[in-house]
Image (cartoon, rainbow, N blue to C red):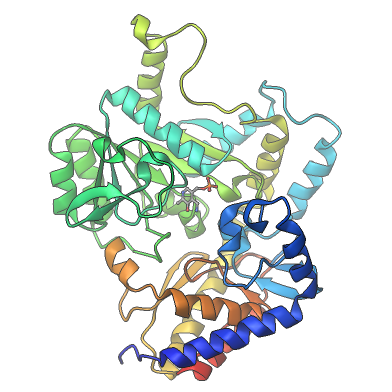
Length: 457
Ligand code: PMP
């Protein structure tokens, strides 16, 4: 079975038809999109919201469970789920309830609330790390992870894998090009030379990893257990064991960013595969979709952090508490209450037991459909997360995953699905299944993708 090429002019014609169909069926979104241009830069509140497959932004009306509706009254089966922010469904009832209750009792005071204790106990029990800090986005938690890693190891270099995404953490905006660490294309306004203290290696390339670590100058390796932001790249057998062995051997900390791989199961990929990170980051769905993230640390790392905080070196303190980490609204009492309800009642083992078989059903259904159409796209699944990539075999590096991209094809598929009431995650081909996802919607997704394939090939 080979990946069959399509006629480019046929794709262009199909994309035009779909854009016209979208325009015709979304007069209210069109009207709002025009209005938004007056004072929102680019006509959207965040510039990347203009990068979806639609000819103008789709304005949402409301979202609940596995669905959302737009301002033109269309209903969508949502397989994007806020790119993981809502991976347990939109507005889960227990979170909605405590938000309503807390609404009249204060949002933010810069002081801890009792919920913080319950949350930390939940997190330790679930993910195995001894201590926790709360931040506002996964980006921030990753930033603080890098800072602490550098502070406690007294080293400056960080290693990441090519094609990684860990949020808008400056240092991670680097790629591997002809064996060299370079700035990412498209990076805006970066005055600092990020390559000075960053080293990029290919995922699954253990020789390159060892070479990057062997100078004993690397503070931390920051990675997702499975790469999920350049399509999906799975770790090869033995990769994680060797990553851990090498990082320990060279005195380098291991930071696992589980923001997306939390789809794996109740304790994330870390618990499912017995990984032993020194620092652990998770954001997006942790407070039911409200801005919140967590940073876990082992007892050893926490001890080193404490030593720094109590050191006698005057350079370690300026007397005004500026550690370079913070943000005023982090760990506010409102979000902590939502996170507690979410951890205790939404992100449960039962939820995963419901989601994962449905994702399995989606993955199997897609494989069968693609085989029927003799189309060699690969399907990868990490718990509740499924991805299709335009490559016959699952890519083993970020570079290979990037080569499998076909932006025009991808945009056309996304718009075709959207025009038929199905949304998948933009910028790659990722689908999430939540407890409220209906099997009929999964069937509809597979059939609609099959119809697209028939229309193009
Ligand atoms: N880590 C990973 C693995 C991510 O995929 C993302 C966002 N896609 C982030 C961190 C950053 O999350 P946020 O944009 O919420 O800060």
